[in-house]
Amino acid sequence: MTTPTPPNAVPDFMLEQFAELSPETLRGVGDYARTDTYVAPDGMPDSLKESFALQNDETLAAIADYVDELAAFLEEREADSLAAITDTGDDEEKWGHKKILEWHGG
Image (cartoon, rainbow, N blue to C red; front, top):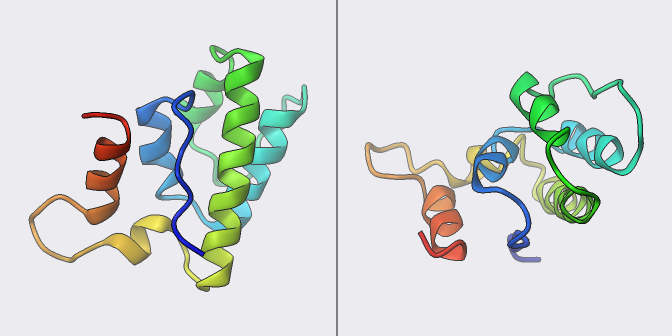
């Protein structure tokens, strides 16, 4: 399984935050995006909670699908987060961040 490709509908700033989340939290974020609940999962940054209120239904559906795929990808690799497996440990940009920029034409 390769790293899931984020849909264009998902804002870049959210992708950066998703890279820091655990598979368990990502699954909770997916559930949160799919339902009309006010109870966010533990570990979900406040900035994500606030930004969800500004997204339309199509974007929320795309977010839910993407974070579920990302959680499955991380669970398969027994990784704590996307950042944990893409961190090069040097001062250059992280591989994952570079990929996100490439995917979004940045």
